[in-house]
Image (cartoon, rainbow, N blue to C red):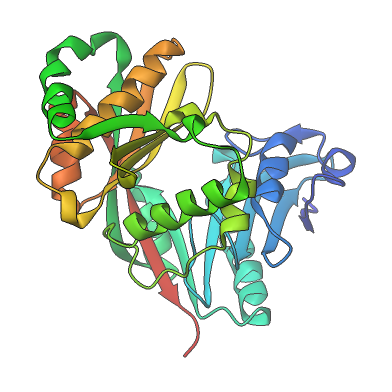
Length: 312
């Protein structure tokens, strides 16, 4: 069969793809990826197309400003093939094209993520030269099982010590406040396992990426005028919210603040009648994994981070 590998964008997708193979992205996925990219991001999306316009293979290469943050000279890659078309060299074909794009853009390290339960995919990646470098656990909380009354004493203790909980929505909607928030976010992010060496995204980039999210889900712990902890929860679907970041200023650890801001994030989800909250934590982040279990989060299949060095 005369298969073709074609660069895809949201503009040409509908003209090229008439049918999408099992588990492969649609035009909305392409638009979402393009929305994440800045003017400095290099984003390349490839599709393997049959003569009848069926998308049976997909590849993505991205480097530069991105979410999650990429180290300099690193590129995120992703490859997926319709199960009916596997073991025919399509994944290898896409990967060869992606490696060529990576060399053109002077990337030195390729990174990808694979669920720890997908042994076939992991073995394929290892054969292509990837090594496992990290392990992140996904956890999920069934909101219906959460009883906030069990934790009321935590907030009484914090309030008696002068600490109160609020949200970013309670602050002025000006540039100064937004910059202050993202400065604080980065201060906490740099303490997260796996973030060492990552470049800081500019504040304007983060402001633009999250401008449409409800700031009532950006929980803050405050001591006087000082922000000392945060937990961010954002909407993924009508039923699922994602707890993207929780952190505590090093000087204020040991007071139960991580648990407190996470509880407020859960209460926010309850107010919006959500069914589940998801989150991810690095396997080395033992304190946060403990907090999640204590709150009732159940561990789901984790994700391996893999890298392949292609340049010196």
